[in-house]
Length: 338
Image (cartoon, rainbow, N blue to C red; front, top):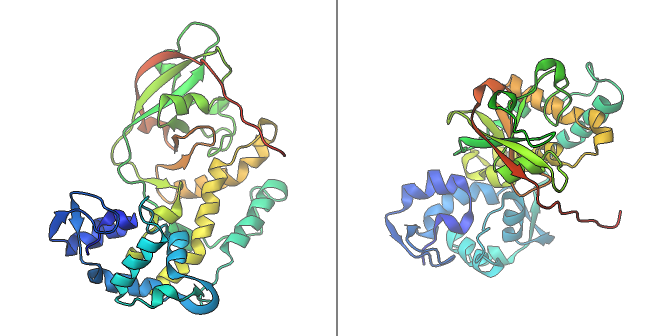
């Protein structure tokens, strides 16, 4: 029985660890992926030991597999149900009993960063905009950002503008607005223009909230392939516990990863236009710090489509290559009880 990177869906195992142990290609015994690097499960034992040590036996707890799935998004392949995941973890640890026991996260690892962010968020919005009394551990924050690099970032992105009529916008008018006309955005404060790009034309048009029948100019932009971007879409999927070091580092990350998720939600959360000037302040503050740390932009999920958005801090780092006209054929609205 041999496993493969697809069993786990972890980029640390996929890129850094399993390649060091794999000596053959074939079909995985667990997730059934074909023609992939295979490895003996026991070869991963040392990598998993530090991870499972951040959990302690607890009669009222949950199985280790449940915690690993929830905290780190491990075993996320469609075929890796609880039974297969338990079998694989037992083979890795060479212990068939431990996967039947129940555990809870160790109380040794605690963090108040999420609470502190909520306090700062509220103060920035309603009390002190420029000299808040609430603070974050910015040194730790910068360290956490380093675990969220956007890898294999596509170089083609799109921006859309609703047209007044049938006339398409020229390329020179499809970039970020000038400083005096740059209003508040999810990432940028007023007067500081960022360039907002979507991963597809559909995403770019969806983000400008069009009406059925309207026409939009959609520009294609090219960005350098060496941009340094923070990916805030799914921290639990992006952070690999196997690249963090010992159990203290892993335990600390486990309690901080909820904070990273919360920050990603700041950029994705739907905001009503009437409250945008206030509700965007926390995400603007977040992005200004990310920019200060030397990053070129942030990647975040779209709240109105299945695509991805890129907020580029320096609009000059993207070059428009073409503009085309598209018409909005349908706008779909879904509702639910408030």
